[in-house]
Structures are given as structure tokens and as C-alpha cells.
Length: 629
Ligand code: BES
Ligand code: ZN
Image (cartoon, rainbow, N blue to C red; front, top):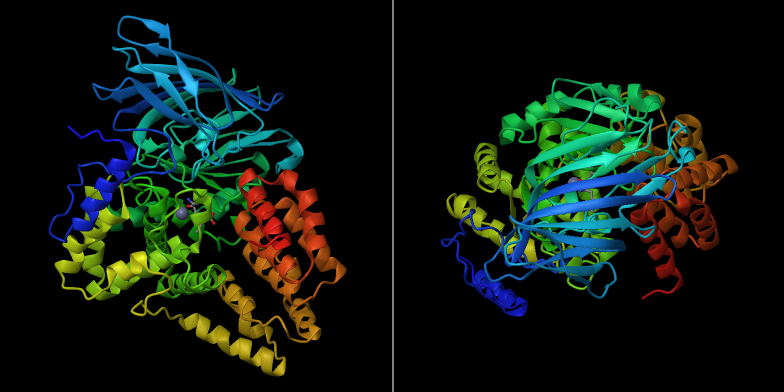
């Protein structure tokens, strides 16, 4: 039985207990994470959700979801209420259901705070263990993006997708929206004829005649992994347990790109233990999807910008697959611990890529990642607390903390540990870690205690772990990443920048990653003729590879190399692609080269194609530029 304390007291007790923890007193992994999540209104020790039955109908005329969410709940014997998170939802009515009766329940919606939304507090009659909430979404339900046919690939049918992470699920489902709270779910979704619905759950592979689809997620997941997509989708199997969904016109190319899905799952299983989610499918979404990928369980959501035609951008798929272990199976307890999700996932991603394509390949990815890390630290400031692995996001939108620090500093810590203990020991350790914490959440402090006990102490590793977790910048004792193939690229960069030499025969076997390294290291202050020559010889402005095009366009902006052809490609790219990782550097480059007007004119035109996540980021970037601080 747990002590029930007022919030503030629980918080100080939590920190007190952590401050006292020594490597010897490792928390029992069966004791669920008690870390304080400052981004939920829920009081899970009092009453928490265990199972969701969701029933929604999808209305493309009203751009609205409506129906009910019914929860089975566990409650402490003293609890008289349950608190859920909602944001921009219309609550129609609430019912409490007990073994003998069903009755309308009193509820209140508290004050809305910025990105947190509002608490929905429901009074629980004595014997009630089920509540049902009838509700509707609104135009401000930020998780949802409603696309008209013109915004899809095939241009024939409308499309809807959701993006839950970090705290947007509360904008389409009333829920306890905390990564430390897991539940199972089932859903019935009705959609207009001619469309299919898919979710982060068991999925249909064909259209039904009545537009009704049912779903089941039998493994407990946190709310940020709830996901729904509706559109004209078709499915193609890759193996017995993997496959691809896409609009019909994208399906062939998507399936070609994903040929290695099954190999990836097998490779990850042999390293880190069984895949626990039965199927692994992927959906290629319309281009406005704001991320590269999102690890929705059983059905990864992906941007079409990874469909390069040559399978060169599939590290992203390995990344989202890896989340089936790090993130979905073992979950960060709060968004302050986000690096646990992403750092482990980047580490796994690179191990998967190494297994499939060799160490030269994965080291290129790692070195590009290290470059991202250095750039992010310069951007944030080397003393910024946002460069700590353990974040402190109280009072802020968790989205603010979701930088490359979690990914690349997290990766670097794990790679450093691997190098210190040796690969075999580290692999065994990680496999055991996933087993010990499966279907649980873990805080950075619990993780530190666990790794102290099972790795650092046991193998007498010399490492300032606290420095890595709680200090800014990159610790000096980090693993050194080298890439043989990039050393050759460095030669080509020298030849070009010193004597203007470009020899196509030297680049014939380059992968996307070598191109990225090359373009990233071309200075932006060369004579304009250098950029013309690059474009002439390599046709970079016409690259069909979104990653190459994005870095090349950034260099073009910064070097003021903008012939009209190029300018219109930039315009088209920023208008059609909503992936934030591409948008941010391009808009930033425009602002930093005094092209505010151009940035604003493109943004004003493009923004109704962007999902709220990208729209908010770019709007903030521009506002900040106009009025710093
Ligand atoms: N879980 C993230 C995406 C995310 C992060 C959504 C934070 C919302 C808030 C996903 O796994 C991810 O990291 N995607 C990357 C891919 C990559 C690093 C290969 C992306 O979208 O670029
Ligand atoms: Zn990730």
C-alpha cells in the first residue's frame, strides 16, 4: 500500500529518497515509477485508468471526432474522484458505471493553462469502477491534422492523422496523459465510405463495406502512443508480421523502400530480446506529417520524405522500430527523462544499422549525429540547462525539451559505456534492462541506480555519471567517433574549397550520408561560382533525396546562392513538406541572412499545410526573431 501525500510533500519525499539512494539500494523494478510528472493533472495514486474503450465517429465535413471514451479504473479505497487531462475538448456528459447501476456523474472542468489544458475532475460514486465520457473534438484539437484531398499524395480523398507525443493526446481523447500511466485499449472507429482507419493497435488490412473498424491493443501503453490515421489506404505485406500502409499511389515505392523491415525486426530481437507487439507495420503519411517518424506501437507513422527510391533513409525505420524496446516497452517516466527514450533508441538504431549494413555505415550515422549534437549545443549555449540529459521542464511545454541533446548526448553516453565495458557485457546488460523494466516507466534516477548496480559498480567503470546526467555540454571522457568513409570525403572537400576541383568519379559510390557530410562542410562564404559549379556538376538542386535537398537548400540560403530555379524549389519544398526537422533550419537560415520578409511570405502561404506542431515552432521562431527575448 502506498502512502498518499499531498502533491508538494510527495515531491519532496521523492527527491529526498533519490538523494539518499546509493548504488546498493537499487529500487525494485516492480515498484512503479513514482516520479512526479508536472505535465499531467492526474493523481494516479488515487485513481488511475487501466483500460479504455473508445468509440468515435470521424466527420470530415465538420472536421470533428465525436463519441465516447470509457475507462475501467483502479482506485484507492479513499479516493472519491478521478482526474483526467483534457485540452480543447467539449465534454457533453459523464456517466459512472458500477456493478449495479449506471448514473450520470458530476464533473468539473478546471482552469485551462497554456499547453497543459485543463483537469477534468469526475466524482466517483462508492462502487463505480467505470466512467464513460461523451465528448467532441474542436478545431483547436492540436493533435489532429485534417487534410483536404489536395494535401494528400493521390489528391482524391481527405485524410486525418493524429500526433500524440508529447502531450497532445489530451486534445483528442480525455485521458491521464502521462508517460508513467499505462492502459490497454479497444476502439471502434466509424469513417465515411471509401476510407480506412488504422490505429496503434491490431489493424485491418482491407476496407470494410460499412466504414466501421475495430481495434485492440492488449499491451498496456501510455497515452502519448495513442494514434489514429484515416484515409484511402492500401496495405502490402513485407513478411508474415511486417507490412506497409500508404495511399495507393505511394504503396509500391513505399514497399520497395521497406524491403528490409523483417530483417530489422530479427536483428533487434537477436540483440535485445523478443519483439513484444506481435506485428510491426508502417504507414507512410502525407507530407505534412511533422516528424520523420513516430513510434506508435504496432504501426509506426512515417513521413513520405524517407521514400528516396534507393533505401538510403531507412535508419529512421530502424529508429522507430527500436522504440518498440526503448520507449514503448520501457518508457521515460516523465518528459524530463525524455533522453531515456531517445538516447537508448538512437543507440539501438545504430546497432541495427550496423548489423544489417556494417560498421562503416553505422559510424557515418553516428558522426552525423555528433555533428548535430555540437550544433545543438552551440544553439542552446554550452552552459544551458537544456543541454543536461535530465531536463527540468516545469512550467514549460515539453516540446521545448525535445532537442538533439536527448538523442545524441544520450547516444554518446551509451556508446561511451559500451566502450568502457566491452560490447558483450553491454549487450547482456541492455537485454536484461529491457526485461526487468518491460511495460514500466523509469526515471533518470532509477536508471542511474540500476546501471550503477549492474554495470558501473560491478565492472568497476570509471565514469562521472552525474556529470553526464546533470551537467551541461559534452563531458570530456566521451567515446571518439571515427568514420573511414568520411575521412575520404574530407579529402574531396579540401580539393574543392582550395582549388575548385570536382571530380565526379570520386563521388560515384557515395551514399546519402557522404553527401550530407560533404555539403555540411562546404563553407557558406565562398565565391558564388563555387556553388554554381557544385550545382552544375552534381545537380544538387534537383536532388530527389529530401535530406540532401534540405542541407543543400540551407547552404544555398546562407551563401546567397539563389537563382530563380533554386528559389522556387525552396518555395515548393517549404510549402509541401511539413517535417519540422527540415523546416526549422531553413527558416532559421532565412532569418539569419536578413530575409524575414521572404520567410514570412512563404510561411503565410505554407502554414495551412503544416500540422500544429510545426506551425507553432515556426511561428515562435519568427516571433522570436522579430522580438528577441
Ligand atoms: N518519438 C520521436 C518523435 C517525437 C519526439 C514526437 C518528440 C514528439 C515529440 C521519434 O521517434 C523520433 O525521434 N523521430 C525522429 C527520427 C529520427 C531521429 C531518426 C524524427 O522525426 O526526425
Ligand atoms: Zn525517437
